Length: 227
Image (cartoon, rainbow, N blue to C red; front, side, top):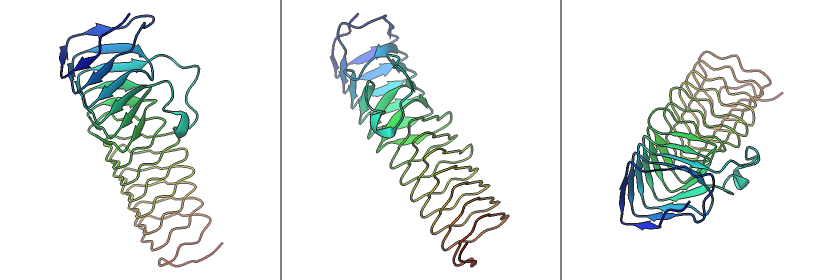
């Protein structure tokens, strides 16, 4: 099956779910509303386009991507696009804005995700803002935010942080920090501020706790330096 390249086009109520494609579209500066496209590959590019109420899934890969760096292989690619109420699986998004959408097995780079139902999987965002959260796998977020459902996981990171209903997990590291109901795990924070805390292997810096229960030590302006 094939679909022609689209440029400055408006596509509505269109479903293409073939068992195989003979060519892959490039959709440029176009608007897709209420569409379903399945079985796409890295040859499919959406550039400066707007997708609303649309589902995009890439061809099934042999297994889940194991790192952020290979997460971009074999995926449809979105560049400088806007997705709203979309469902995107197994895709790479660059400099895009995603609102009220569900993303799964997605790698989002220099993108902003906001609204409810955000699931991002082989992570990395950049100018961040996620809402009903869940990031996962190889994590990273950069100018961060995240919010109420939170949970970041695996290789965590964040950076200018603020997380809220929290839980961040094993390779943690935040940086300019703030969390709220917290949990954290393998830790390290920097300019800190936590709230109902519980942290585990620690190392904070300018700290400020509240509910506490930390574990293996070293914080600074909240004292106890060492262990």
